[in-house]
Length: 199
Length: 199
DNA sequence: CGCATAATTCAACAAGCGTTGAATTAAGGA
DNA sequence: TCCTTAATTCAACGCTTGTTGAATTATGCG
Image 1 (cartoon, helix red, strand yellow):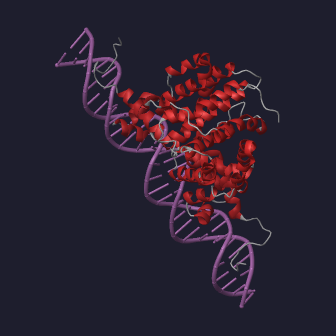
Image 2 (cartoon, protein in one colour; image 1 turned 45 degrees about the horizontal axis):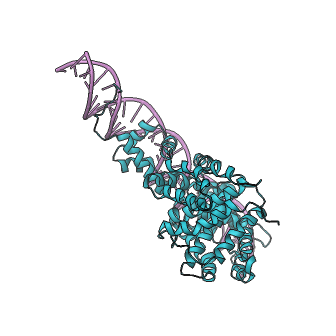
Image 3 (cartoon, chains in turn red, blue, yellow, orange; image 1 turned 135 degrees about the vertical axis):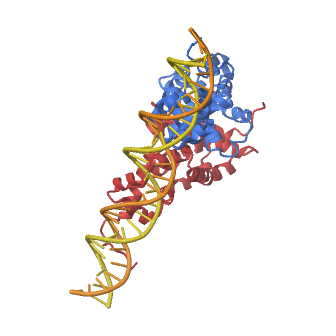
């Protein structure tokens, strides 16, 4: 395709290796503690090469959290499952987290968002809104549909943080099926119970 | 009392002012992005003075997240409330978060724990275990009491992150009573429903 | 007052950071 | 082979950070 490619077809793509290293390091350390020098070392290249390919730490980070999440599109269809919708929703959510690639990107975004990195906070807000809230909220009846949907999402995100970030036992080591079985009825309750109790 | 106090009785306690500034800055920025120079500037003193009083950034941070949380002791008593226990539990939890002082300390701990600061992660684990898990888990019947308690706590922490850290709407601006009313029935369900559904 | 001690500031160090531009090596087409 | 272009490295700048030790100022007691 490109006449100006300096590498052979089967050779390792250094740029991709840097990106993989970046995802891994950002996931472990978050934006602040991650260093370009550390990412370069992980990829086995010179720090300048990282800058040559990605321009800046900001842009490298942006490239690291840019992730397509195929299974999440099934969220919209989950609601036709009736009483099993809650279980299916939780299953979809955690199936993404249990894969190494997406998990690294999500962890990087999450860690950095909590750390206060503006770009990451914004990315996290957009991600939750676009991938989850916009697919779930319209399916929940009542004026407070969006609020209810977000509280429900907070339950899932809260578990993700406890399991993958803080690694609190026994959530960190429990089979994901046990956790799904536990949370599914509560998710279902958010979907069914449309009336806000009087206060 | 102490013969060796260099300040008058009514004079401002510089050490306390530094600590207040530290809590505020750590809460906003987290451990990594917070700087001793920034904290010193906030307190209106020289950076060296911070070091003189607290020794190191680590120890200053440790002092900043060391917080007594009086109302949380009431958690143990909440379970005698029967069907209202879930509502009371959520109320206690968020009443702590809605106060400025404790919120700053909690935010600092949370932000830094997510950022990967070892000391903060450990502090957060201990905090959740000591203040919440140990009080709640024994009250939940079944072998998986601890797991269920932690999933329940994850729901509360997840909302706290969405509301106070990421500030996602409409959770960030909703009256806390609305959120409590929403989450209370799900908390109650964690308390009541003792059987783990077959998988 | 004068002295001891605490409170506070000043100036500076060493280390690590992101970033830069020039130099060097490797590769592919004419 | 030569020459253009990409890939990669080298060395260094400027900046910020936590930390340090000496110098300076304020304070309270005898």
